[in-house]
Structures are given as structure tokens and as C-alpha cells.
Length: 262
Length: 190
Length: 75
Image 1 (tube, rainbow over the protein chains, first blue to last red):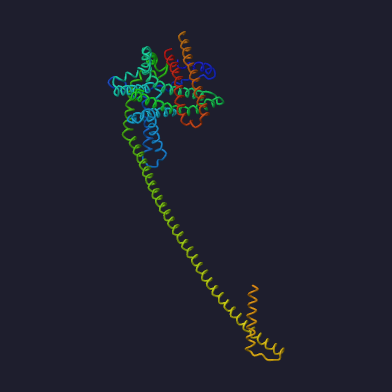
Image 2 (cartoon, chains in turn orange, red, blue):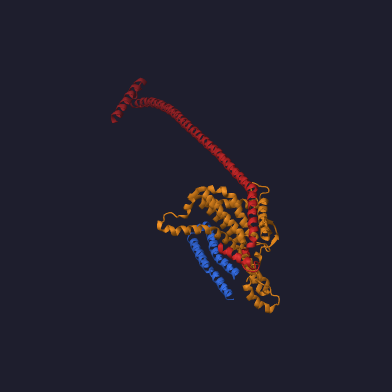
């Protein structure tokens, strides 16, 4: 079923070459278990996804560590980058939550770095993109959802249920509006996780298709998908950054909603 | 979400590796959830423990150094302003002094001029009066001479006319008479 | 075999949702250029929101793609 396009394509190609390659752009999303581990009957084996999470975080921490190896008042390039990343996230928090949001800074900063570096290291050829796994983004989204909801109940108690009752509406509309509000609130983790996962998956699928064409077309046709793949890799890098940014901003917005009940 | 999970279950029930997105393969969920949470916790710990304090420290240090520099610059500026004000004050004082000196010099000069002028005037007046006196004396002397000549002439003339010598005293008397008459005529003519 | 054809049609229909996202992106960038032309000074402040908005609109199209993938798994 994966090779619906490939079937059509391979049908033509098979006539020319007896061993026509099959197009499988979803192949590189395959999670492969490297070291099977089972903990209390639950499977926690180390897969390539997990390894690439570690590689991404290792790169992130290594860059930060390298930038801060000898901090100086007049920063070098890497130190400037490290400081800029921190100030960038601090700026997002200040813009969306305000001063009292700074106590969530380490959490949001880690989230931003995690998502950003997982997105970007996925562009290395032969690598794996952990954020293209729905489970990984879903874990974050559900975590953010539980955190912000818990924060709202901790801050406002049962008053937090008022969040689902929009103010300034006639009472007659309430039975209609309250379920909509609740559904839209519950849809937050879904949209948050699916947005990131779908962006990464779609981008890498397109790249996979382009690489397939580059590899299989004859030389006079291959330069076109190859050029596209170069451009699209740059676009993917940009999208990876934007998606990390949006993930961070939305997290801030949800925390802000919990703190201030807009 | 439910639909996705359902779909994933369906995919897992069939051939998980060959149909649908590999992302929906439920078999891989538990390990990824576990390791994602663990990795995130480790990242959070390392960032909070090492990276964020380091960056904050350097940012604070830079802020402090900039603040120090600013305050130092402000101090230097205040000092410079003080020096400038002092200089202006001194300049003004010097200018005033110069003005005073100039005024004094002007006064002195005018006083000297006045003095010289009055001295000159006195001198010239003295000279003038001396000259006038001299002229008066000369006039007198000339008049006396003329008088003497006139007497001599008159004596001669009368001698020739009447052949008789007129004594000097008589001639003198006559000349005096004529002279007074002349003077009277002169005065009358005036 | 019939339900296979139906699932293909369903996938195509799900992917057709991209059209809405395309319209949205076109509107957004058109309005953005209009705004920049009117007020070039606001460009640096607005461009941030433009990219956020673009990512949101793009994500809508990708929801359709995800549904196509789900149908692919089901079929």
C-alpha cells in the first residue's frame, strides 16, 4: 500500500530495467529497535529514534558547552549564539506571558532546544527525525497540556472551570458554547502534536520523493529534482526552526491562559 | 487522536512495517514515550544546572560592566562640565580684569592728554603775553624815536624858516602840543 | 478491490484540502505585501507574525495529509 505511486511508476520503469528501484519515501520513518530492553513488562528498548534524540541533544548541549567554555564579557561567535538562544526564548516568554512567566524559563527553553535540534538534525542525510514520530511530539503535547491544566487548577482552583464559559454571552447560547470551548481545549494537544509531526513527516516525505527521482532518473532529467531537493532542504531547515518557534509560543500561550485565564 | 490511535492499531494488527505510516505503529510507542521523557528530564536538568546559570552569569556581568562604564562616563562628564564651568568663570574674570585695565589706561591717557594740553596752553599764553609786551615796548621806543626825530625836524625846519634857532625845550613843548592834538583828532575821528 | 479504490479516492479527497491552505497562504502573503507597501516601517515587526501565521496555515494542509496517510494505513 505504501507504494501506490511507486506501483504506477515501477510499471513503466520495469520495462526498461529489470531491477527497478521501488519508491518508498516513508521508509526512513521506520523505527528500528537496536537494543531491546523490557522494564516491568513494558517495552523500553532503544531504537534509532531514541538514539537520534540523544544525538540531537548531544549536539545542542555540546554547542552550548563549546560556546560557554570560557565565557567572556565580549562574546565570541559561539558564545553569542548561546546567549542569543537564551535571550530569544526569554523574549518569547516576556511577550506572551510576561515577567511572571520567567519561572517557567528552564522548561520552555529545554522544550525549544529539544524540538529545534531534533528538527534540524533530521536534515542530516541518513539521520532519523525524532520529531517526525507522532509519539514524541504527542508526549510533549500531552505533557504541556497536563502541565498547563494542572497549573490552571493549582492557581485558580475550581475557578478554572470558568475558562470554558466565555464571558458576555446570553445564557441561551451557553449550552452550545461550553461544549465547543471544551472540545477546542481538548484539541490543543492534538493540534500541537500533529502540527509538528505532520510538518516534519511531509517535509521529509517530499525530500524522499525528490531523492528517489534524483537517483533513478537519467542524468539529463536528474538535475531538476536534485536542484529542488537542495532548495527544499534549506526550506526544511527554515520550517524546522519555525515549527520549534511555534511549539514554544503555543506552550507559552497555554501557560499564559492557565495563569491569567485570558 | 482516537482515530489516529485506532488507525495505528489497525496498522499494527496487520503488517505494521509495510502499510501506512510507520509513525502509527503502536509497538514502538512505549519505548519512545519513556525515552523522550527521560531525555527531556536529563536535558532540563543539565540546562538548569549548568547552561542557564552560566549564561545568566555572563549576561549579568556584562550588564554590570556596562552599568559601571556608564556611571564612570557620567562621572567623567560631570567632571568635564565642572572644569568647563570653572574655565568659563575664569575666562569671564580675566575678561573683566582686562576691561578694567583698559578703562584705567583710557582714563590715564585722557588725563595725560588734558594735562599736556593745559600745560601747552599755559605756555603759549605766557609766550603770547611776553611777545605782546615786547611789541608794546618796541612801539613805545619807536614812538619815542619818532618824537625825537620830529623835534629835530621841527627845529631844523623852523630854523630854516625863521632863521632862528628854537630851543630844544620849546620844540619839545610844541611837538608835545601837536602830538596831543593829533591824538585828540585821532580820538575824535574814532 | 472496491474498497481499495474507495480508499484511493478518499486519500485524494483528503489531499484536496491543500487547496484551502493554498488560498489562505495566498491571502495572507498578499495582505502582508499590501501592508508592507503601505507601511514599510512596520516590516520588521509584522514579518514575525507572518511566518507564524504561514506555519499555522500550512499545518492545516498537513492535517489533510495526515488523514490521507491514515486512510492509506486503513486501506
